[in-house]
Image (tube, rainbow over all chains, first blue to last red; front, side):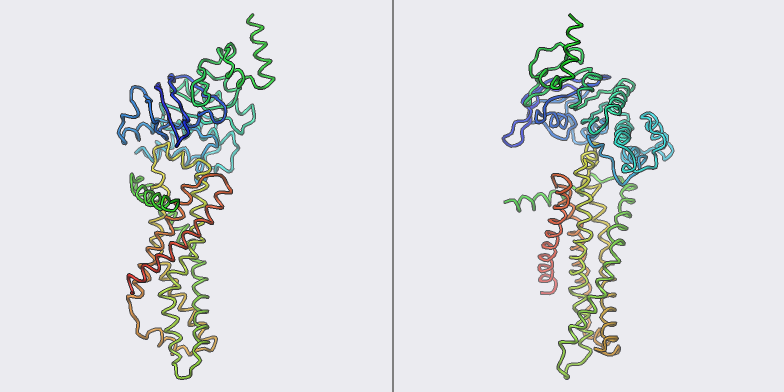
Length: 255
Length: 245
């Protein structure tokens, strides 16, 4: 579980995060949504420890980030897995090399132990025949799977995903969403996804945090988002005609 | 002010490179790969350029020694001094700033653009140590390349002198041995170590801290070549004053 208490972050005169408090539960897919420039990426980078908040605190299972030593922060980082928007796979390494990288860097496992673990996670993300291929030789969807495999290979307690569906076709996007949700439940980890994808919001948003101008505007679940009267949320989520109709049908059915 | 800030940032980067080292087992393979890419990969162009530069220096010296009272051995002497003191260490380093430097900037810059550096940071890897340290160690092999460049440059001079009919082989070799000061070779090798450090770190700095996309990677490569050359030339002046002045 990650608890966030009134975090602020500024860059020069630009006050990006203006006091956000929330919590992200274990075993659930938590989504952060909001318009571009609302502070989502800065918030995610604060959660990852890449930016240190100017004020406020972030607590990871009882450990306050600001009170941790450099060594403890480094250890905490090793409990985190991250899936980047563009996958961020290392071009010079094969799929297998990419997934094995964290094991090489941070464990003293034997070659066969590492190989078994890599085979296991690649199988888990449904990639069986791609071990020896380079990232440039596989599709965008496969690259995302490799990124997920690399993120979970160290058995993380926290999984962060930045726009995991960007650049993917709708069918592959749903597969990736479902995979992330399955892994979250299976490994009982705290998953936080930064997304613009409304399909993800509806499908896997067990908790949704809506940011606007660096503030928490709304939070709830994918069921509650249908019912909310918050104008900023409805304007953002139901900006397309399709979603407007879906919402209308849902509300009519409910009545 | 912008330049001062960049210089400060460069020295902070150097400090960070040596902090929190990567496991030796992994570092060893990274260093070997960089030696292959940065040093062995550049040997072809170093040999090619050195041979012809040696030849050109010899021809130009010969054409300017018009006084019949001056011995032909001076051609060999001038070729040796030019190649050992300047052409092998400095000229080759400028060429390397273009070849190796732009490779370093574009490879690290592309990693920045595609979030691969962020991925390293998130994992808790000291990305500067992982990316830049092996390059620094690999280019420490560079004095060997400069030594080869000296040999090839002088050979090029000999070929031009003998086969161009500017000086007989014996005279040229006599000139090569004339008033030989071994410290000149040491001076050239000291310079090449310093230049090697510059060639590894200045382009890394431009790649690591670049912002933007593919276009900016190209711009960073060009900027890095310009700054690496400028730093090499200024350092060359300072080292020459300190070591020979």
